[in-house]
Image 1 (tube, one colour):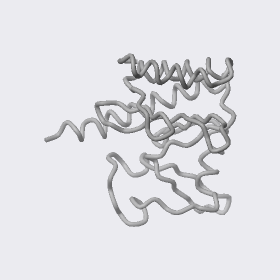
Image 2 (cartoon, rainbow, N blue to C red):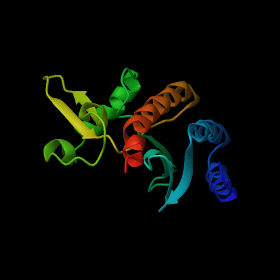
Image 3 (cartoon, one colour):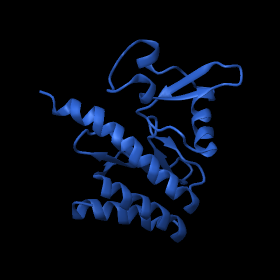
Image 4 (spheres, rainbow, N blue to C red):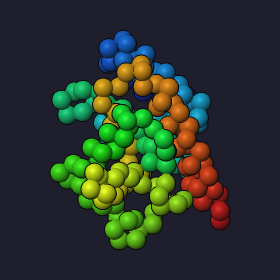
Length: 172
């Protein structure tokens, strides 16, 4: 963390978690910090963005029932586990599913190849469904066992954002 205010924000959040979960969140937050992502309050949540591209990689907070959540952006990642495949399936098969505007309407707010900007899931009938890749997806039941894969996904998504989004901001 870069500032005392950011440290206090994180300490306050972690202080509301059970100790074992606070340790897992703390480890992931430290990894985000090493990658250059800083926390900032966004309404009732905390988002982690990088100054080089201003895109969100992680969002944490408490849901409506007071349960903690950890949401990760990993749309550019490939080769993730069945657990993360199920998270994407849930996003594209929910009752409120709608195709992302960049796919449905050709709107292009994000940079990079479209197949890396979207979460993609193939249904058993062969139909492919997509979900907006700019959104961080909640990781239900976050545990210590998830840490290595989440850190690897953070690094992979960060490389994508640095290659496409950071370069786009540097261009006059």
